[in-house]
Length: 236
Image (cartoon, helix red, strand yellow):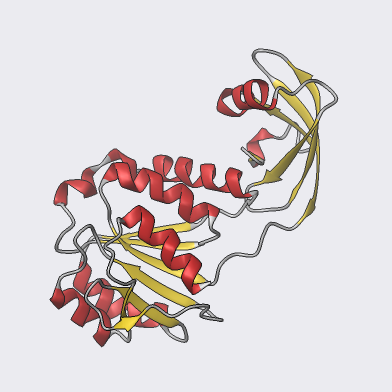
């Protein structure tokens, strides 16, 4: 991890000293090879970034004195609407979404989304946040993305999406679209990406009715976990 992400309850007596154990302690010991006196990059969830000086370290506990002075990186002006992928793919997509600076993600239903995906424990808030935190640690960021679940396609696209995408470049990725995906949008974007196999024609029509343009990435058909960073890098 390129940043040790801290939380309010890590702090001792509301001061500037933190105590850490568990996964973060193991990483600091085994990967950073830290020792008392060393300085590590740290950040407080939802707040600033700074440095932590190790004051105590053993097999059970780490203590640091921290100073937080820097703002986290600017977020991408992007709302991502993603048809719920299979759970093992979602576990890989979430850290990437977080690392890229996307701060608003809607996971939605679609015809080709299997019903069983919605019962997966990967969708628990604890599991989702754990994956998002990995992305923040990678990118040296502290602001967790907001993740929303919408298991009914039509009400979301017809009743909610037009307001969400207002005053943005609204595009839905579709392999057989005639229009190429734009480059360097230069402003806020709402991007919709379908499941493996893509959105069905009816769903594309619903997106178009909501003000979206269907765009293609070319002849190659990409997996969801490849399409997300490809499209984001193209648009920004």
